[in-house]
Image 1 (tube, rainbow, N blue to C red):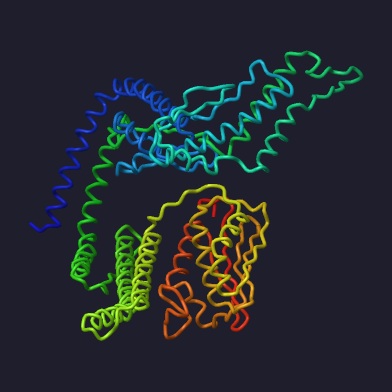
Image 2 (cartoon, rainbow, N blue to C red):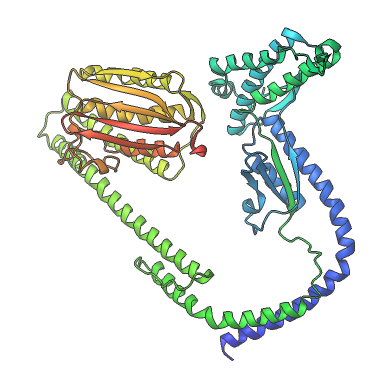
Length: 564
């Protein structure tokens, strides 16, 4: 009996037995299981939503909520799916976390909102509006700090509330972590002024309406209704103004776990299902084995190092998709191998000459051919530090390309960032007799990591200063262009030839054909800059003319990388 026949007989027999057993068990237990499952599902859903809401209230963010969802999923044997209520963006799906099958999401969906509700009890008029403005900013600051502590793997707790606004307790957190989290927690003046403007609108009187010839008095003439209208306005304003911080409202869908009990009657479909299984098994046994064998041979040769292995893609079914996926994997492995070889060659080229120089000097010192004076030791030290810089830059670039660089996202005023960069680069620019100038729109604010952006800009400015003649000016500009922020670094240097411009951001590339370090750095700064910009969801480009100068252009989305 051939393998194909054995597969056909075995699968057909299993299908017949399994279909009959499933029919009997389904009809026997469906009714009692349905009632018990419904009640249990309601209790479990209530517990899950309660704990997730408590987490959002205590942490001021949904970051790291995946760990709680995974723990609840394991305890309850349920699939938990969290998505934003407005955009329906999936935050957590425990089926993915637990490597379970991911069928279409079904189950009971519950809307939760962990944000507080402003309660102006006993307040009215100007005092109520002043308390509202203070409460909005206090909640923003407390929530930003709590979210930051959550990212540092601490667990703040909302311990008390005044006018419905919680205060977080993080007494056990180290002082240096608290100080770091408070940096950037205060809103910019424009946001605070907007808070006051929105709060002031709650003081606008509701004018009388006229129905026919008889005026209808405004709610303010009744006292309590006016106060109620003002209170409603204050509550709505509070919710609207804290919308940019804190946990957004979620839809919590609690579905069955990986082995749900199906109550769908299948007795009527036993004959049809059996026939389909038998026919399907026969067709599979005939057509599946041939392409699978080809894939097996190709995969074996690929594992032995033959990276040029490819298989024919026939049809658009699953096997065709599998063959196409195998070919893409082989292409990726081959490109990766080529990149690795090029990188090793570049690193060897960069390190061979300086290491040879160091070895020659050390051997000359050992043989007494060179006098060990301070100038020689300084030269050897400088060469060693340069090699250390190359190694450090390589490590930074490797982490960036692997997605392992850590980013702390926060609102960044780009004008202040450019001023800070100019201050840091001023000594080297002054030594080269180059002037640094900043032209910035102070209103341009975006979500970014200030330190990483400063590092990227510092690489561009260093490059521009190095290639600018004495007496020239390097300009740092920032402006808003549509929904993006545009940063430009403009120099009046030697420029870059058109044929070299596509390679500017490659590793170890230098405009000097001799690749001398006297005319450039490690050759990694611009590659690091490009990766940081890409991680921010942005784009970097340049325009240059030989003898006239170069302009580097960075475009970044105002709302951060997730909104590109």
